[in-house]
Image (cartoon, rainbow, N blue to C red; front, side, top):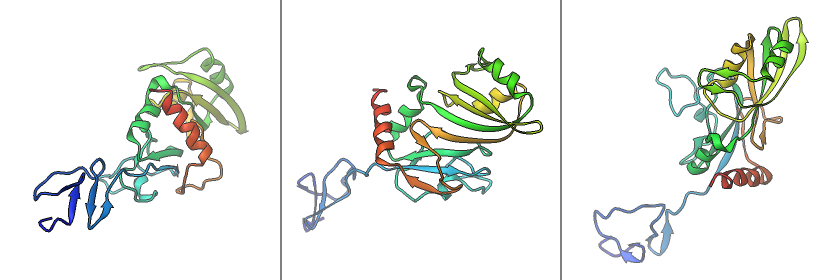
Length: 216
């Protein structure tokens, strides 16, 4: 820096000077370094038995073991330890917060394998279900028989409350065998294999940005 090789916002850098590599223009030997982090979006098919957290004191696998190592990457909402399916990641923390805010009413669709009287549960759910933390914003629910005593529920809700679908099923007298989130907003699971991730498509990004813009 004494030789003038480094400049910050056009001025010679000083020893001990504090800079922001995202906001400040830092030039070394005539070449700019740093700058804004490019916005990245990914979708992971989260398997069961993986923690939605940065690290786990018990040493269990986390979702960050399954996605590329990208600076500033954060997940959008959470899936509990046993729940599978769509989990979004982004470097845009403001957008992640907007997508999770209740006023956005971003739809999430889950496919749930359950045991119990699913037809009666569906009829009850359509009249409204109250959980201890408030009513479920249920947009759709339907049941399809699998085999004796087992049903597949397709549930669409518009919130991301903690373990909401599991608690909904318990309130309806159903036992959950498997829970998969197959859609978050415009992003669907499709044929993405468990444990695999992919970048969002251009169409998905356009729709995500439209949802975020609607929150401002």
